[in-house]
Length: 124
Image (tube, rainbow, N blue to C red):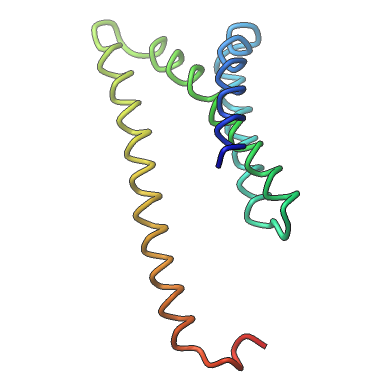
């Protein structure tokens, strides 16, 4: 997780500048593509090298997405509602984290119950 956090910081440092230079919508779309690619690498990882690669890719993508998405929400929000929309966007980020934690807890318990009911011959 430390590697992903470091990549997040790097992505956040450069994401806003890239959005200003090449267009926020374009960088936003590219960051989502990089995030999806990173998640697929994490899902297919069979060793440390791919785990590190996926963690760095997702960290860079999330970091680059944060300043770009907030600026994009601020630009696209109707007059008088900009602050509300930016705060709502932050709340959705938090809601996403909560949902992922709940789902991972559910799947962990389910995996343990399946593994507990499986005899040693299931694993061969």
